Every structure is written in C-alpha cells, then in structure tokens.
Image 1 (tube, helix red, strand yellow):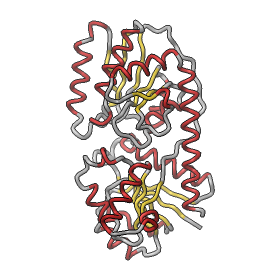
Image 2: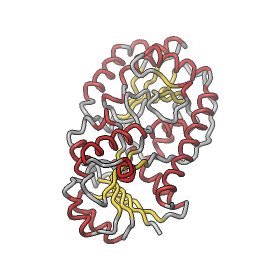
Image 3: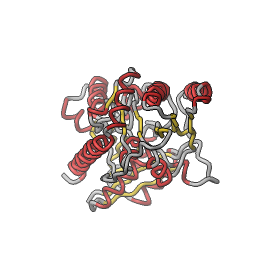
Image 4: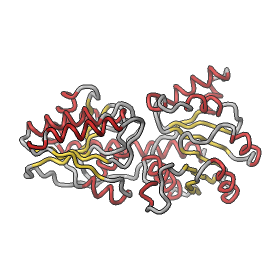
Length: 349
C-alpha cells in the first residue's frame, strides 16, 4: 500500500509570530489540494512544512512513507546522497511547478535538475506537459537515457483543484467595476498591460476602474512594476480610477475577496495552472487569462502582449458573464478529473 508524504519548505519571509498567512501560496494550496484528494480517495497521504533540508530525515523517519514528494526546487542535490542511503526504499519525487521561462529566473534550476537525474531513487515530476517533454529531453541528453528511462524518471503530476459550481449574479448597476488581478507581483504576471487594458475597458463602459492587487509578495524584481501601477492610478485619480491594494490573506478570506470581484484577470506570460484564476472562477466570477492557462476556455483567452486583445476579452466577459463562468468551470472540473486519473495511474497501477 502506497503512503505519500508531501514536503514543503517554509517561506524565508515567514514570521513565526504571525498567523499562517505566510504559508498561503499557490504552492502550498496546490499541495494541500492534492493531499486532501488522495486521502478522500483512500490513498494515505500527509503534508508537512519544514524549515530546510535538515528536517527531511526526521519527517520521513516519523511517517515512514513509500513516496516522498518534494514540492518545488529547494533541496540541494547533494542532500539526496544522504537521504537515499538513510531511506533506500523510499521513492523520492521532486515536483516542479513552473515552465522553463519562469525557471530561467532561478539560477540553480537547470543545474539541480541535471544533478537529480544521477540518483537512482529520485524522480522529477512536472505539473505541465511542455516542461515534461523539455526536462525529459534535457536529461536524455545529459545521461544518454533511452525513451523508457526518460519516461520513468520524469513523470507528469498535474495540479488538482476541488470541483467548482458556485454561480453569482453579475451586477452592472454600480458606478465602478471591480477587477481582480491577484497574485505575486512579478514580471511574468503581466500586471501593467492588464491594468492598461482594464482602464480602456472601464472607460468604454463608462465606469470607474477599481483595480485590485496583492502586495504581500513582490518578487523577481517586481518593485518597478508595483511603482508603475501606483503611478498610473495616481495620475488618473482625478477621474475616479483606483488601485486597490490588499494584503496577503488566508485562503478562506481570499476566496471571500474573490467573490466580491466583477471580473478576474490572469493574462500571464507563463503559467502551468494558475490557482488564482481557479479561485476566482470557483466563486462564480468570470475570468480572462492567457493561453498559458491549460484549462481556460479559448473564447476567453487573450494575447498576453496585446492590450487590445485583453480589452476585447474583458468586454466579452462583461456582456456574457454567465457563459464565461459556465465554460471555465466546466473546463476546470474536466481538467482536475483528468488530474485524478494521472495520479491514480501512478500510485495505484
């Protein structure tokens, strides 16, 4: 019988004196959804959060899993020299959560992925199909693997999200439009172009724009983006347009915030799943995104470098909100049903 242990690393900026808000990230939510789904489906699973590499042995010794899933790149490869000897019967899996354009910003990424391939009991999992093939090809080239070895060593573990069905009434009577463009502020999230398109959209429908963002996480040189967003709305303040800044919330509070939005935007340059978009659509809020979101209905996807394309998707969602919600919820539920099958195929068969 398989026994799964998910291990996450605590964020460096987490303050022990604060609440668990510092843990609430896409990575954390992704792992917790998977953990819950496996347990509901009678596959024994547990999720733990550790301070660093040195805590892994203790958690594995206590739980005695058959499979350990390390969520994201944070375990230095040399640590597996020790861990695989201490726990020779454990199947180790390092699960990647980003596409190559995002990983390119992490200086250690390709070096560590290459080194992981040298360990017999260490596999690499991706949550997207493109990077699955890219990592397989990279490691086949590095180690002269055949196709079967590459497919066995680099596996596909897509994201899961609980089934969604909430509907809400769309309100066009307000004098403003609430648009949520949530998530960490960083270059590949494309906040600025989305804000520009949203501004044109709000003026077209003759409403003030309330553009909502999070600032709890400004990453990967995202400070100039935040500064420019603030400048844009300062310049337009006499017209009533506002940048609404929210702190980082716990999951339930964030979902309540999502439910107050009129439209959600996630027209990112690079994504593998996008839990923020899933959170918005789960609350019955119409969402537009880029084609990077694998479950997003193509009617409501935009060209992430074309503000006119984003503007048109906003208009379409404004006038056809129920269609947006229906199609995107349908697609998301189908996607995560397929996720279940992928995970079951690995752990049960």
